[in-house]
Amino acid sequence: MIVCLCKSVSDGVIREHITRGASTLACLVRCSGAGTGERCGACHCDLRRMIAESGANESQSGTQSDSQHNAG
Ligand code: FES
Image (cartoon, rainbow, N blue to C red):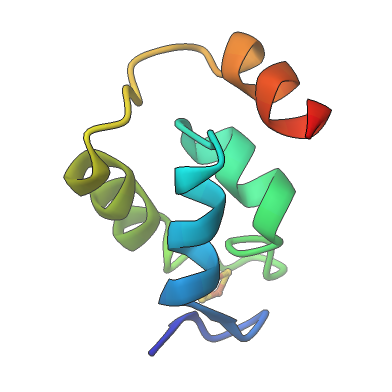
């Protein structure tokens, strides 16, 4: 299923990035490309929900997990 219509990013791709350590919306957006549609962001609540459902901690600022995620 496509989660981000603007960038054609599927739920499978999103889940893979979350599994790899994208535990914040900012990290997930940067790594997957989802949520970067110009003047859109309609999928952000879905992205947040998927992070929350995964059990990842979205309350962090994202800087720590960002560097960990981008390292691999
Ligand atoms: S649907 Fe994701 S940015 Fe528009």
